[in-house]
Image (cartoon, rainbow, N blue to C red; front, side, top):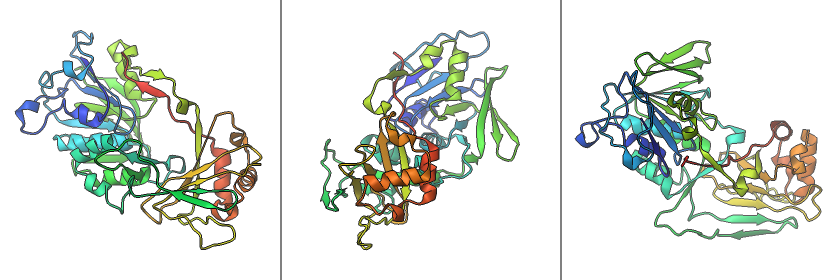
Length: 394
């Protein structure tokens, strides 16, 4: 049996179908021990999800429901509350936390070697708005999220435009959608740390463990196979498997294959202006200098900056954007967002990258704020791109 769970709070919606301690209204789960559930979560926290229960031998694989309203949480009883979450990013950790609150013993498989490392090409910030706070409310994390030591409130920061003539214009960003509660800027690494710190003892996170394969067992369950960084192999047979393993999800792929209806596990991709862009980040010091002539003029952590280009910039007009951070020791990352055919992406060496930055942003002391190693990493790394809009299949 298969059901579709949609926005805005995947983790919350998944576990609404799972047992909730002694509450009889939620006394049934999506899976028996010998009939494992499969769940798929895509983007962090506010994501789409697919849930499939592996059917007993001989049962029909025809879907009986395609919306949460058509699925009764009482339809399947749970006998063993064990779960594996494939992927330890924000979506996976959020799901693990809620599952633990619902009485599951959870194992998280994460291929990263560390809990919340600084990853240069994932050094973006999340803006946790009201939808995201529906999760943090449920998880008891909103108070810590809102702490000035953790995040920057959308109601309490400014944007400074740094112009090529050396002038700086500071303004308060407009509030496009008024709300009774602010949103919060938080770096991805800090958000992962927040989620990791909240995990109870019933959640075991296996770092350096990468999902390799899934097998259906003779009794209708699922075996999870992961390879570990020490060369060993891990095999688990949970009653629930949650896939938070990215856009190329193996969990989603196997759900489609086993159901015999792969199209129903394939998101509908819709065009979007942002999905055609490419982005890359340049790491800068936390207190980077903003004036080549005055070393005392530096960036403030709780402020955003927009570096505007010179009119005669050799590769055309480009900008550098820096979002606000709460931690004054956290590296600042300058976002470069351009079309895929832009000549910046063809820069092939550290000196070419530094030369472009010097000519385009003469008001920025480039050699003081961008190291040769960082410029080389920019040239060698290649840009990423936001994924296209993906929606549930009809």
